[in-house]
Length: 496
Image (cartoon, rainbow, N blue to C red):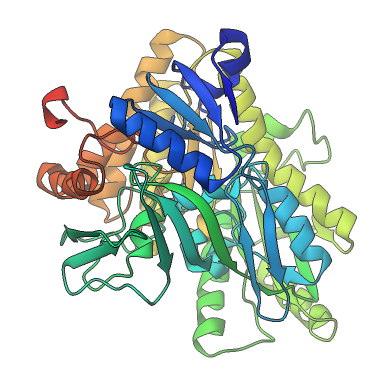
């Protein structure tokens, strides 16, 4: 096992894609679960805080240490098994998602969770319950986790298999390999009926595995995961369509969403049923225009949609999408339809280029990222969208707004030019989070809370419910050694 502590060797582990920065004493590179156990036991004996680091693609500072040591999962990178017949895979946490997606695709299988940044580690996606464009049809990472092996904060190991360990009403029991029982009270707070990656998943009668998914490295270290796989679709229709107004683009999303819900409800296979519904506002299109001069200069919004299909249904479905585009006054003439794998990849790169450009702007100007991750019920989404735009426009800040609008999930990214604008953006960010909560939504739909959004989690759940979450943390990690600073604001007096 390698241990690094020289400043020039560990700098890349002291920052993430949000430009949040930190410091630590050393970075450990375990090569097996036994190494992780050894590190954790030593840290527990010395009361040393431990931060788990994925590949640095996160946007909340969760993997960025504020002292103590770091466990980097880079060398826990084995794909142990891919079982095509039984549709599952077993992997270690440091497997690159991009590598895994290619390997499964090559043998005709699909792993649906697809965050924008494919160079993330699978362990990080589990720790944050990551999602992405395909979430509109398939849901978040949680839906595809069958089993987990987790090293707890004292070095004991727990094996969790979906369906085998369910909370008895509000009592959750975790049984370790050594036979120790840890009993936690499941909080009774209400989680929003939206995509959500804010705080611990807690529900009466819940499966205990779901407590660890999305816990952001605060309850244990994932050392192995069994993932559910699906059959790869025969074909995927992929298209970017442009609209002269944002209203028309939003209408298209709304109509496509309704049609997709209806197709699923009635189990219709030859009707519109979007895999992804992604929106780009006028500012986003201008922001990308230098790199993509083929963007229609008259367009004020665009939507990228995808739908799985077969060779038999493809032409009929393309026709139905074309009819919907025309009904919503979309421009079919410059629409980008992908008919080959190469075309599809170019469209995906177009979608991802926006996030990359925003992150590059933030890093070059040395700001922390000011990008919302809010989601609300569908009935409230357009109200939130226009309210948020108005707040930023009135401030004079530059911004782009885009994201998973099929899920009523918006990434509005402010692009400050100086510190004064940055602090103004922080105030607006809080107001947008407040609005999302008031509309029954979440402050973080897919990126998690990390260290950056802890104050906004209080807006969402309130002090009493946060204390209930913290009680779970204390049960599993009495000295708060693991992932300290993630999810919760805390006083030193809160920690034994």
